[in-house]
Amino acid sequence: MFIFLFGLGILIIIVLIISGPQLLWIRTSCIREYAMCPYFMAQFGLFLLIGIMLGFSDRLGHEIKKKGSWGIDICKIIFCGIPIALFACSNLFYYGINVPVITNFISSYIIHIESGQIVASQIILGFVLITSFFKKTS
Image (cartoon, rainbow, N blue to C red; front, side, top):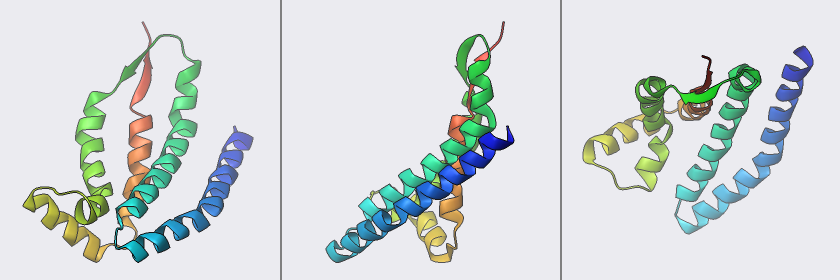
């Protein structure tokens, strides 16, 4: 188990190192074109993937070995996943997607005080989504 977790940590570090220049290139080209939405979508996808990798190693890897049919924890997705998703997508709401005024107001507040919470919420969202799957045992 230790070797698996250590390998996963190394894999996440490699993904972050490899994706850094690509994200920087996307950001630079988006700034030149005055369209930040593609950059925020790429950032969202990258950190969601990291959260999925963490969730897979934590819980889903053990669930695959179990016998039974797959189920989804809908309550976890509704009460935990949706609020985190709204927070994680605040850059997209503010810069690219037209949404109602209240969501735009909340997104602008989050963006102006942001110091890493959006990235953290994207990772947490990936973790919550992947750990919402489980095997039903009879």
